[in-house]
Amino acid sequence: MILPGFEQHIEFSKIIQENGNNLLNIISDIMDFSKIESGQIRIKKNQFLANELLKTLVKEYSQKAVEKNICLRIDPNNLTEEVYVDNDNNRVKQVLVNFVSNALKFTEVGFINIGLRKENDNIKFYVSDTGIGIDKEHHHLIFERFRQVETANTRRYGGNGLGLAISKNLIELMGGEIGVESAKGKGSTFYFSLPL
Image (tube, rainbow, N blue to C red; front, side, top):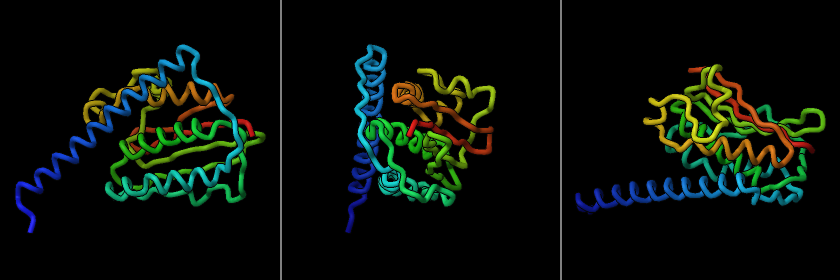
């Protein structure tokens, strides 16, 4: 038998833990951006299997997707051949984690696809969602630091406006390009390309 007060304690504990994690993420973002601005970020290249990285992300974030009743999956049209990438595995994962976290935050119903494809001598990673989407007129703003598209959504969904700016800087340091395709109410696809 669970006491009524005990359930309330559990709920409060969850709130404290979630807010603590949010604060830790903000501090981490500020530290990363400071390192980027001062030129202290170093890219450590190593060879990794791109397909395995996607599988790892789906495993790590599937529980959060289930809690929101969203389908998080590797894109059914994903490249099936094994692709080795010679770049900074940790930084690539950091950018993809940012994309997946944003997709989870801004998607209420539907799905999130994670995928990759080859384009000439590049590998393109992408995260697509069926979320709220972004007006085309705001696309150029979203990769700027401390910029968020709509104040109403900022209040509703939270965030500090650093994640995508950090992602852009990291991808450029790795010799790649980053971008977005989106329309309001029709979801978003965030992507980046890196040289193979």
